[in-house]
Image (cartoon, rainbow, N blue to C red; front, side, top):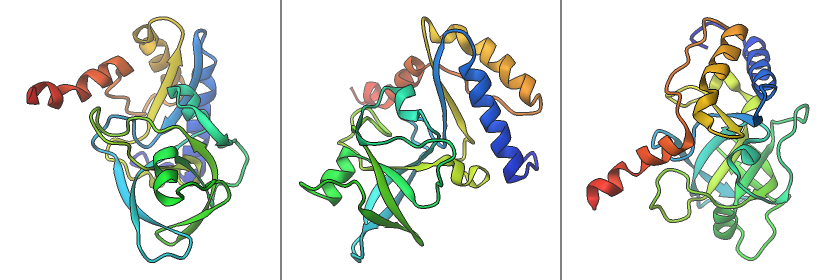
Length: 209
């Protein structure tokens, strides 16, 4: 939005980045997200189940298709987001959220209220570390990022995540070049491997120890 792109222009650009990055030899999958895991700058908001007044808190992610494949997060039930599927009223939840909001029940097909929206659960994924290494299991809501790419509320923009064969650090240059061909004016920053992301997340536990 800072580059004054319209919603359609932003969507086409992100789709092109995903398609061209996925086509790089050695890239197994690619996805974009509003926030990378183990990032303290992510969003946490409340939601309620069905018509209940009491709300619960969850970490909020907006993601594109293949986010879970790219990070190796197991899909337990239901399905991932798919291109071309309407995105206004669907959400994927993790097991920690299902255990808290729907104990001993199948969450698929159930509806939750998030701000002024009623959304239907279409997928259930395994619980992974969300914000910190030492955290207890965090409930997480995963919304389709295609719903509102320009409305992304992350302070760090949109994050591209790439799963590769071999050493991932060796793919930084071809990924940069690929994105540069699509939009030379796009600001690229904070390129790192997931190993580096984990090492950064270990800073506070190391200081405490």
